[in-house]
Image 1 (spheres, rainbow, N blue to C red):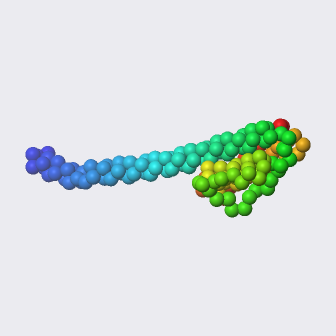
Image 2 (cartoon, rainbow, N blue to C red):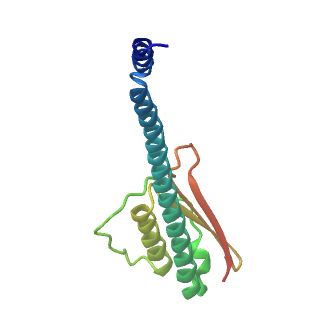
Image 3 (cartoon, rainbow, N blue to C red):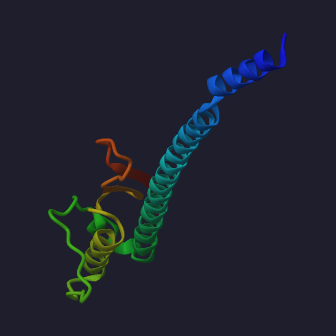
Length: 155
């Protein structure tokens, strides 16, 4: 081959490869964008699960609080038997009514449920020395399941 033919062949190859670097950059940007979207989704899921774990821990603490209140007032244990309240709202200026220890304990407990859990509510069932506490709240998990907890203790 002659020198002129070699130069033409070299120019032809260069023209065919022009823009190849741009395609590599676009593909790598696409892969990076998909990775960042996955990372954002992972972060959102992590925050949701952390919120649910906090709500469940708070529900456990509130159920244990009621058990301790009932244990301290064993002589009036049957007075703690109550259904879930309708439309609980958090009252920041909550004051007890002095209607009896058990009545005040339940009122304070319902207020704590409303203040500390999203749409929190609860009921107590007393059967002999056995106390069962049901706590419910709105879950943030994205599905229709609400959070719930049932605990039973012998007092």
